[in-house]
Structure formats: C-alpha cells, structure tokens
Image (cartoon, rainbow, N blue to C red):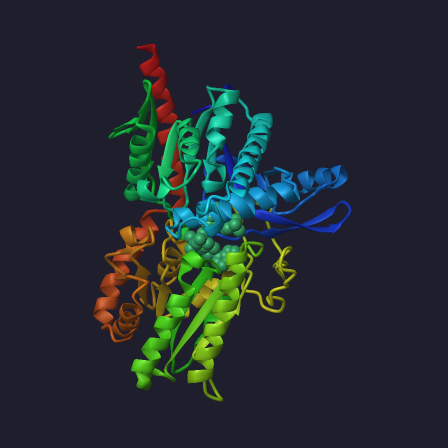
Length: 524
Ligand code: ADP
Ligand code: G6P
C-alpha cells in the first residue's frame, strides 16, 4: 500500500480507550508529569507496533482550567496521545459509578450493586446519563481528529456507546469495538436496566471483538434473546445490516520479556532474588487489587496448604504484588483492608523470627515502553490518593519497574492466577514468557479467558474451591521436571506465537475487510 510519492502508507489507527497509556500528575500551573497507566489493556496496546497510532482517552486527572488543558494537550501530543477532559462529577458518575460499580461487577458475574437491585433508579439513571454524556465527549474528540481512511478502534466496557455516537457523525467511519472483559451470559446481561440501548449502540460498529469464542457467543445470544435480532455465524443482523462478531484472543509482546531477561541488570536482579529466597520455593501473584482477582481466596488457599503441609512451612514463600486501583469505589476500599487483615493473620500464625510466609506488597510499577510511544520514559508513581476516603495508601517507598517484574517472574516456581472471572489475564502470559529456563508451574483459574489458551499447560482450578487450590499447590511443588517441561513448552509456544502485534493486525485487517464486504453487499 503506497502513497502517491511511493512512500509506504501506514494506515492511521485511532485507538480510543477510557484510559490513556499515561496518566498525568500536575506539577505546576502549566507543568505536568506523565506516569505509566496500569492494566492489561494498556500493556497489550503498547505491544502493537505496526500502525501509525494515535491514542485518545482520559489522562486520569481533572483539569478545570484552559491553561492547564493546553499545557497537558501539548505534553501528551509528544506521546501521540490526545486527551478527553472529563470533569470530577462526570468521572464520579461515569467512571466510578456506571463503569466500575455497575458494568464491571456485572460483566464479571458479581451482579449489580444492592441499591440498584432495590430499584433506586435515580442513581442508576443519572449514572447512565453521565455514561452516555462521557461517550459523546470521546466521540467529539475522535471526530475532531478523524481523517478519511482512518480506522477507529474503540476499547472496553467504558465505551459501549461510542460506536453509535461515531456512526451518527459519519456512517462511513470504519469503527471496531473490542471488549477486554468477559461478556457474560445473556441471562446476566438482561439484568441491566439499560441492556437494550447498550447492545444497539455496540451493534453500530462494523466489527465487534472479544477475547474468547464464549464471550462472542454470549453477546450474540444477548442480541437475539433481548433484542430479537438474528444471529448468524458471521455476527448479528439487523434489518439487512450485518455487524461482524468474532473472537480475537489477545497476546503480549513476548519478545520484550524474553529480550529483557538477557540484560545484565536483570540478571543481577535475578541473582539477588535467588539469594534472598534461597532454600525456599517462590510462589507469585501479580494482580490489581480488584475483587475479580480472587486475592483473598488465593491467600486462604495458601493458608490451607500450610496448615495441611507443616513440612513445607519454612520452605515456601508467597509474594503477592497488589496494585491499588479504582480507590474511590467503596468495594475496592473494603477489599484492601480485607486482604491486609488476612495476610496479617496468616503471617502471625505461620511466621517466624527469620521469615514470613506471605510478602504482600502494594506496588505501582512503571513499565518502560519504547516503540508505539517512542519518547515515553516514565517516572514511578509514588502514591495513590483516594478522593472520597481521604486515604493515602502506603506505596510510597516501594517501586517495581519492568525489569523488577521480569526478574520476579523469572525466579518464580509457581504463579498463582486465581481470578474469579477475568477477560484474559496477561499476567499469566508474562509469567510463561519469562520461564524458559526455570519451567515453573502456572496455577490458573478456569474462569480466566487465558484458561482457553494456556489450559493444557497450566493446572486449572476453580478459585472458589479453596481445598482444590491448596491441593494444586502441593501438586505443583511436587511435579516432576519432565512434566513441568512438557507443560511449559505447550504454553511457551502459545505465548510466543500469539502476540499483541498479531492480535491487533488481525483485528484491524478483519475490520478493513468487513467494511469492504459491506460496501460490496450494498452495491449488489
Ligand atoms: P488487568 O488488566 O485486569 O489488570 P491483566 O493480568 O490482564 O489484568 O493485566 C495486568 C497488566 O498490568 C500486566 O501486563 C502487568 O504486567 C501489568 N502490571 C502489573 N502491575 C502493574 C503496575 N503496578 N502498574 C502498571 N502495570 C502493572
Ligand atoms: C482492566 C480494564 C481496562 C482498565 C484496566 C485498569 O484491564 O479492562 O480497561 O484500563 O483494568 O483499570 P483502570 O480503571 O485503572 O483503568
């Protein structure tokens, strides 16, 4: 594909996601510093290199003044990011409220919050109104920056309304939407008061993508059962217009992890960690402090294992990296104290003067990325401040950068990923990528999307069954080297062959094809 002057033409990709890959922190009236944002969506999209990409999203901060907005827009432009400015009230109602208190728990089978179940519809309605308003604000920014030929790729549950807003502007725009969480069974989705409006809005896209075939199937069922539309093997049809629906399992930039492990500073770090944990097997959990990650269940399973296996007590350590997240949402605040309490109790019960069984570390890490956003070199966040609870979480003197994370993955004997539900779970992929010399064991929840791709190599568990998870720890610790090698090989081949880059290329090329096919159909 070439420009008239013969230079190769790289299609412009407008990535629209609630969160930009960087979050801004105000340092002065017109001065900003940018810090890496967390979560799998950001990690995956940073692995996407082959496009002329612009990222449109919220910088995680309220900027009421024009001077501040101008300065931030300029700082972000250097990173190829374009901000959407949301005020505090919208953030509260749209992000904390509708997105993270309603859609997120519902899509992860936790259900709707109690007050909404009891039909205090006022708060539900105002949150939904804010959600639509916020989506419209994202659409306005996309529309300002859109050029003919661009592909617009909308991401995640925050922006289900966006495809409709964009097509209302310009029906010729190529619009894709991808969900990074599970899409639940239609019986769960139908609980949502705004169920139909949201489905119709998503169907305005040309292509709708999910991590797994099951999520895609649930979405099509919701459209057929709730909207009465026709589901076809290709997608969903509404009055002759087809919205393509398909599964596009995400991956990671595995080379980045594999290459990093060869760096002398990481090798040094690995040596230090090996020394620190000498004589003990290392188990690792890396999760945002989110109720869907099953952190309390994981720790209770570890306690059960220690209880039943006294000989292992001083020979195994669980390192649990927990990343504070969405700290203004009450459920998340409760979880933080719950986890602290359980860890304290277990360490009190099994700890000795020289060692404790659980290292529970609240971390913010910075992840250097050097391709999609070439000038991105970021400082480490030092604290998380919660507006509503007035709490400052204690992350101040700890930091774990990308190298530290790779080193931890590499020295781990057993990774414990026990999400109660998870769209995919990239931590399990990153662990596998870093294990080619150690060949450690992955214990993986059957409710994570990753179970469908890494299931044959991992020990699959039901995270709700603490006895089963405790037994799987024993199985992993006693597994023969031969079996570990075989299981690891299976997963390593998958992780290195199904990359974030390939995921994005497949989605975008499918989107281009879908639009061409639709045009041909209309002409016929
Ligand atoms: P989720 O998207 O729900 O957080 P995933 O496991 O899919 O779950 O993705 C988490 C991603 O966040 C991984 O790529 C992991 O390396 C990364 N990560 C872990 N800790 C941090 C952190 N403190 N800051 C930023 N990213 C982090
Ligand atoms: C998940 C969601 C992402 C989100 C991330 C971090 O991965 O799918 O959309 O960005 O969590 O959550 P946050 O609320 O901090 O953006």
